[in-house]
Structures are given as C-alpha cells and as structure tokens.
Image 1 (tube, rainbow, N blue to C red):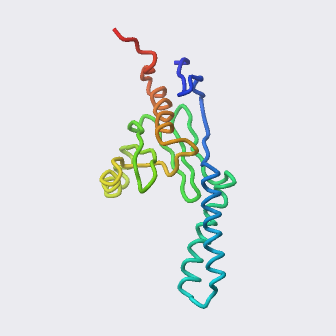
Image 2 (image 1 turned 180 degrees about the vertical axis):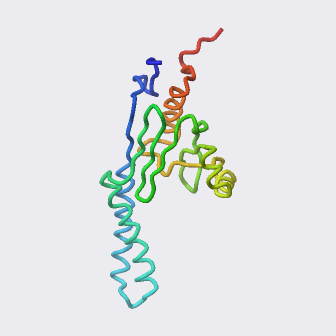
Image 3 (image 1 turned 90 degrees about the vertical axis):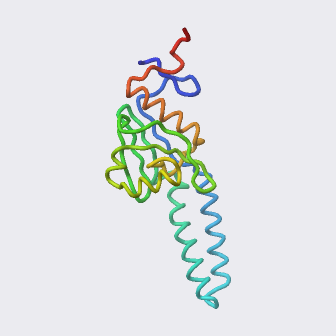
Length: 174
C-alpha cells in the first residue's frame, strides 16, 4: 500500500492539512470594507441602509478577516478520516463511513459533496433536502485552495487507501 500516489505522482502522505484560499478571503474582506465605507459615507441619514447594509458587511468583514490570515478553517486528512474545521463548526468523518467524494454545484461555485449514514440518521430531513438540492447529503464548506475536482480526487485517494481498495493506476488491463 505504500505505492499510493497523489495526482502529481508524488507519494500520498500519511496526513495532510489544507487551508482556505487566502486571496479569495482577502477579496471578500476588501469588498465588505468598501460597502461599509459607503454606508458610513451615506451616514445615518438613511437608517435602514446605514444599519442594515453597514451591519451586514461589517459581519462579512469579521468572518473574512481570520480566514484571509489562514486562521479559523482547515481540512485535516489522515489515514482514518478527515476533520473539517470552520469558524463556527468542527466535524470529523471516518473514511469507512463516507461515500465517494464528487464535485457538486451550490450557487455559482463548485464544492465537494459526499454522503454518510451518520448524517442521514442524525438529520434525515436536512439530508433529504441536501440530496434534492446538490445530490449529496453532505458537503465541505470550502475547496481549501484546490479546485473541487482536485479536492475530490485527493479525498478519494485517501479514502481508497484507508479502505484497502487497489490503486486505480496499479490495476493492469487483462
């Protein structure tokens, strides 16, 4: 099993830690700061705009600030499973509990979706709604600096190694 390779042909590590794309969060922070500046410039003469839009974009900036510095979110992969941490939530899943990972579309972006019996049992209505919307009962909240296709491939390689599935490149044609 030591012959497992990642997508670039390098040996698959025992563990890996991925963080969100800092540039994307910097852009979100700057856009939020720009809208806060507009709300401040307009001032309290229009209270709905000042407090509503200004408050919303202050919140967006507060969420983006730690992420643009690489703090507060990560995806940790190891031989047993993965741990996903965001600012507001942390969850862990074992490879043996997860389906294959595949890209799913949510809004204008692609993410990585998967299904687990644990999610289906704990939240059956939410899992059914997620399956109807994106085709999976669960989804990672970010692509952690990779494309959805590349992240799904990496997760599937870790999963296959943990489950003892032969490496696809190692299978010979008859």
